[in-house]
Image 1 (cartoon, helix red, strand yellow):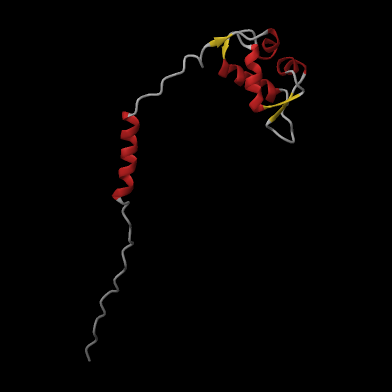
Image 2: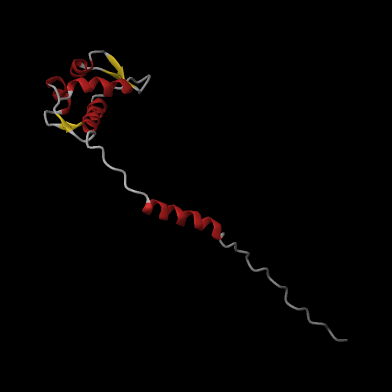
Length: 121
């Protein structure tokens, strides 16, 4: 009696999907669009250095700074002295120095930029 040899079982090769070419195209278009877009011009008035009043200088220093840097320095002072309202972090509790600048015991962070404008020349 002859025995028939069995053929070895075929193992399935792992199926890998290639990344679709369509997804790579938008990324390439985005890079090309950013390179072709004109650079945004810096607003010179925004970067103009301003001298703080003596009340504001007690908080941010006497050096002339751009308005953006004054706001940044105010936040450094507020966080260093833990002057944010714990119940509502958007409100700032004024200590003696900030009360001279803001004129109030508590201001919102949105009011702050408007109130410091009076103290910059």
